[in-house]
Image 1 (tube, rainbow, N blue to C red):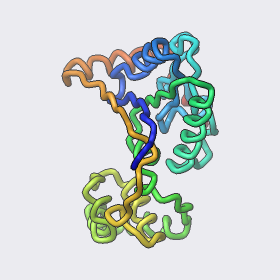
Image 2 (cartoon, rainbow, N blue to C red):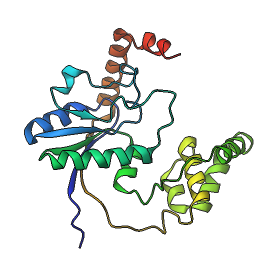
Image 3 (tube, one colour):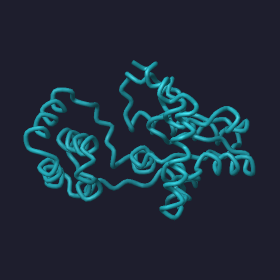
Length: 225
């Protein structure tokens, strides 16, 4: 019998209002937020990643923000390990963990750790695969992935070359594919995905970009050089 605890997850596209909803939910439930955003982990990138300000956080603790520098490598497996630690810590204090963010790769690493093997990056193999991508093209690499791991090939678009290369790397370094690995879930996710009509979402994104520029996004980027 699977006695895995439920885990609240708020997700959705950029500028859909995930953070605001998560804050309101935490206010009602006595919760704390675990950020699931592959860009907001970086220090010094507050504006360009739309990192919630202290005011926007509304006094709700936010975890896994500002945990590494932009030049550091930080994998989805590392994020998931830290997220699991925070989930346990929050629950031990009688609070409700709420995972909030739109990075699907991170979310899969947390909810389906059997899919994302914690295989350490192999720089030599990655370099060879990167060169193969340059010479053979994205379609070739996607076909290569589909042959190595059909489930991963079906999940990833051929233009998502970063994740395609990583999936090939993982498939070549571990014995089992996504299709072959089945484990009991660690959490039972209650996922709430925010959706907007496309024209409304595009308008919200445009408003966010305008606000970023007004707040100094370009200056922030220059400061990262």
